[in-house]
Length: 339
Image (cartoon, rainbow, N blue to C red; front, side, top):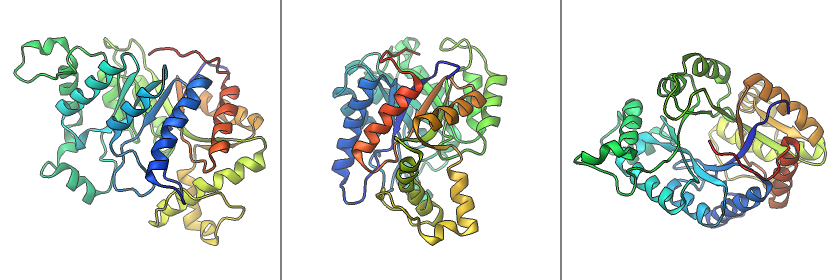
């Protein structure tokens, strides 16, 4: 890699076929412990609701579980979906986490509900316009964390005075403007929403205003990365992700399936394949040699400061092997920097 780039894991808490949610939650902790030894910088957990394949709905609870069973890796939310929560509740939860695990907690913030509209309504009750309050919610959250809030009538305990790094998450160009205006680090969900990646990064860098947090833009990009000993093996392992993407495109969501040698005929239907291929624009699978070339091009194009990868690999040992091979490709030395 021409530029030093930190690497992290976005753990979706995937529930594998023939396995339980309890197994998925155990996998998160074990993944974190494994990548910590390899020198990954962060593990982030994503808030999703009403998805049979995802176990990370209670994101803050799981962050505490992971942080408590690791030693040094940063643990955070990628992210907390602000329309579903009050800023005070988020400040108290992450203030508590930062008190328990100082200097290790990240808080990524998203504008979307992380679910379908019916479930969003169940989460928000009568506050269905909360998605439009994203900027105001972040400012309120910053105020709760600030020592300047000492004379306010509503204060966050724990939370007030806690140094919890905030990130803005994006899957379109909207949040790029906000992250730039607020001078916060920006993470783009290119692993599933590739269309606006380069426009969003251009907006963020062009409009960035220095803040107390950052004096220059700081970008994290996401990708689905599968590394194996050979290109053929990596392609085989990737079929689990392809099958999940097929389920998303056709509205037939399932738990993470084991890999297969031959994908079903529906996968090759022109319209379906086009949609699945769009989803997988930034999915990289291959040997270490192939991965070095693919990621070098991706990171050169994005000029990202950090790369966060997903873990759509069914077999546990193959997943660990992928983490280790990727660490070698990225030249990790087991030391972590602090943003």
